[in-house]
Length: 202
Image (cartoon, rainbow, N blue to C red; front, side, top):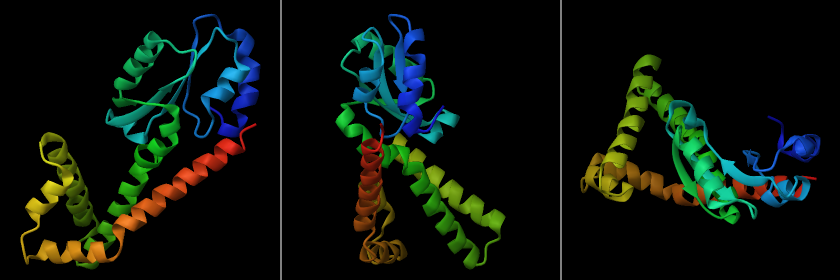
């Protein structure tokens, strides 16, 4: 594993050692398939991927994109490998950087929300251990409910939000704070950075 900017030098180093039929799978952010295919021999298939850290516990989401020399069999093989640690979403490379701002960086956004939610619970009088249980179980339970339900996240939120109730008041504060705009700006910033990384890859 090397940093994205070091990938071209690494490819030049290993190019002669790759036998016909080899598949090279990249997890390097911002390094395009074209960069790989330009350096590697024509007999090597390249597939770009973007896994995320929940793969560690078998709950990952990996985006994969085929290169111009990849066959359907190559893509199926790589997909099967990543399915051992979660779900796989195949798509064009043009969407991969955007995907990374959602599923790749997404766990960090969730952890950040959990951090702040936990601080809030502690400020309301719960011990750190109690706050951790309250918040982690709430996030875990909500996620499991969403996955197992045939309802959308919006429908489930409305189901919890009784008219003129406490949750409605809290959600209104979050909406007034511009949470939708904040998520758009945050993911746009991540996407811009991914494109900067790609532009500076030799």
